[in-house]
Image 1: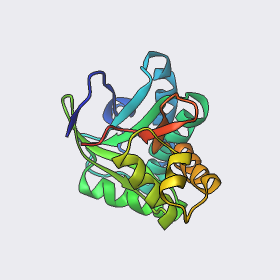
Image 2: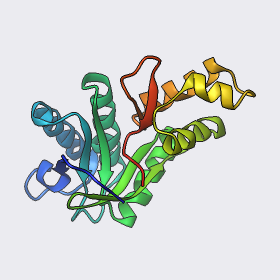
Image 3: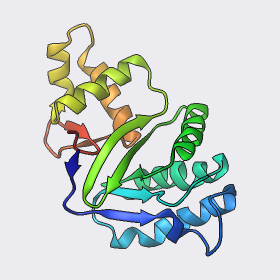
Image 4: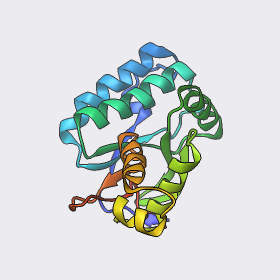
Length: 189
C-alpha cells in the first residue's frame, strides 16, 4: 500500500449521463468527452477512473471509457496517466477480455481515501517486456544503459525499445533525467 498526497479522482458514475449504465459505445464515448472536459483541472500524475458503484460494464463501454481515454491522455496530455480504480471483479474480468483482445494493457488498483492498494497490470505482455516492467518496478529510476550492463544478454537498444513500449502504454513514466530513468506509473509498495 502507498499513500498518494494529491489525488485526481474521476467517478465513472459522475461522468455518465444521469441514469445511464456503463454499457455501449455511446456511453463510453460520453465518458471520454467528459474526461477531456476535465483535463484542464487535473494535476499531472495518476488520474483514477473510479468504478466504485459500477457493478457491470460492457466491453464496448470499457473500450471507449478506459482504452480510448488512456490513449487520448497519453497522446495529448503528457503526465496525465489514467488508472482504473475500484472496479468490481466482473468489470475487471470484462476489462481483461477487452485488453487481451486488443493486446493492450491497463493499470488497475483499489483506492480507499488516499491509500492505493492491490496495484496490478492487466493485459498481455511478452516475456521481455514483462521482465523490463518488473525491473522498473523494483528499481525506480533505472535506465536502459544500466539494464544493459546488468543483463548483457540484451542490448541497450533492446532495453530502450522495451522501456519505450511500456512508456507509450502508460505503464511507466520517465523521471526527467538524462539519460532517461523510468519508474512505474504508481509508486509500488
